[in-house]
Image (cartoon, rainbow, N blue to C red):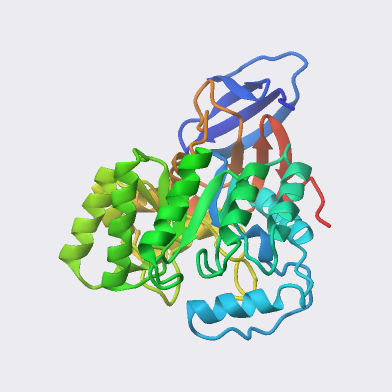
Amino acid sequence: MPHDLLLRDVRPMGGPATDLLIHHGRIVELGQGLDAPGVPVEAGKGAILLPGLVEAHTHLDKNLLGLPWQPNSAGPSIQDMIDNERRLKRQVDMQPERQSARQIVLSIANGSTHIRSHIDVDTDHGLWGIEGVMASRERYRDAIDVELVVFPQSGLLKRPGTVELMDEALKLGAEVVGGIDPCTMDQDPKGHLDTVFGLAQRHGRPVDIHLHEPAELGLFSMGLIVERCRALGMAGKVTISHAFCLGMNDWLAVGRMLDTLASAGIALMTTAPAGWPAPPVKRAHAAGITICSGSDGIRDLWHPYGNADMLDRARQLGLRNGLDKDEEVALALQICTQGGARVMALEGYGLEPGCLADLVLVEARNLPETVVLCPPRQLVVKGGKVVARDGHALCEAP
């Protein structure tokens, strides 16, 4: 439900102090000394005003928040991690509805107003994850928007019945078609990508593909994705997540592919991972590619780390990519706000009159300090409604 609110003495993107008036959930006016009789008032106290943070890549269905500590037993390869997780999900009581609710509330407290989450669909667990996370997003719909990617993590073609489950999940209301490692997962890159893009065309949905494949193999898969994106007129509707191959030590090959992705209108998602190659953020940005980021898995059966804080993720992007100058630190923040908003095609995102009032207040002197210090969120506003205060969500998790 849209709300009215007046924020006093805030500094949009670290600029001059102003007041900001929200009416029916949208920003209607900025200026000093605004008057709005009867409208609730929040004192900004000179805090920096940001658009809501965008968590553009996570896995809400499989965190271990609030559960007993689970020693990590995954093997070293991606396939080992996938198999280990699929085997242990029910043993560790990883209920998707409860676990996704816990992560959603944590994200709200940390200032995210939008989430794109990949949800596993496989023949062992069916639509368990999709149905559970759909229930959670309905529960918290007034505090955050959640978009679901139907994700065949355990394989698409090698597990007969998965395509039909993905089709059903899209009919239920999942918004994005996912895919994973066309060569190494199904060992049928043409079949895998034809199926993914076929589902996207049939349902009128965008595509977001996990691509862990390294070096030349990953570039080969990337080229196949580009071909389909161009042939189907899907510029601006395709995201490649992780894209480890763009971290290979071949300056010319990576540069050519970055230019190709930019011309095809394909976005990249990077988490600034530790221990894996990663796309060069400055080069990708200079090429004109839209870049977003996310927490990926949080305290799950793959890794024990994660805090659902997109300011902290911006800091990790800066550290991994050598973003040290003020304008470069601002790029890291842009990736975790505007970049994610563009990838998710968010309508009315921003701080201008007419934009949706999805906002975050942070106590800091400037934008670089906001990223470097990651202070608690002073206030989080969704559609004009205060949903978190002083680092704590105003809704409860199970």
